[in-house]
Structure formats: C-alpha cells, structure tokens
Length: 134
Image (cartoon, rainbow, N blue to C red; front, side, top):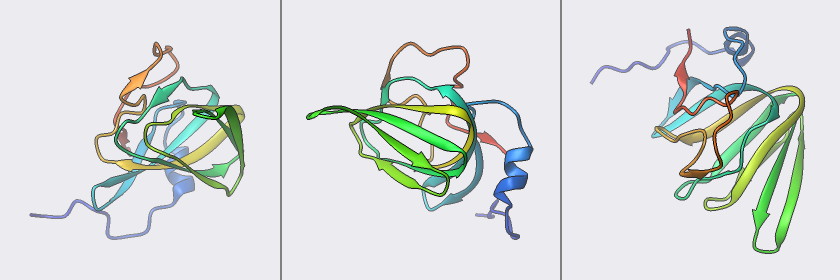
C-alpha cells in the first residue's frame, strides 16, 4: 500500500491560511487511525456528544471555551492560546470562541464534527469528517 502521507513538515499556520470557512476543519495529517485537524472558529458550535471517542483540543491562536454537561452539573472550561483539553467520550459539550481563534483537534478518522448525538445543526457549522487541505 502506497503512503499518501507528506514527506515534508507541514506548517499549521500555512494550513490555516489556506481556507477561510469557520467550524470546517481541514485534515493536516493522520497518526495511526486518527486525524489531526485544524479549524478556524468563532461564535458557538452546538451541543453534541461523541459516544465512542474522546476529543482532544489544542488552541493554536485565540481562546476557546468548552461548555460541558457532566453528572455534577454544567461547567465551562476556558482554554487560552497554547492550552490543551480532552473532552471525555460520552460527555455532552459545546465549543465557543468569543473571537476568531484557531484550534487543532485530534479524533479517530471518520469522526463527525457534530458527534453521534447533537442539537439541530446551525448553518454556520460544517457537519463533516474533515476536509483535505487544498
């Protein structure tokens, strides 16, 4: 099987400048059976749950808030630039960026951005398993 992986380093900043769409991640590479995705975000995503996988976030630029509905109640974690956070599988959550931000997300290949269970999908959210870089 021929590898389709790049043989040179990938600049996350170049990847982020290659598209403008918000909440529409691009797959920059894969690691085993996981996609490494970058996305530009602003405003609210939607409440959703990934039943079978954790979701890893790294804030590249700006700030990301993630509201969580946990057994102990609802809370929001704030991730400043350079921070990481993992939403455990089965946890209902809603990302929100108060201003334009850039994030990196690590999820199993084929995972929908809106999870397995979700609220109605607003027009500004791309329900996708990720797009290839241009």
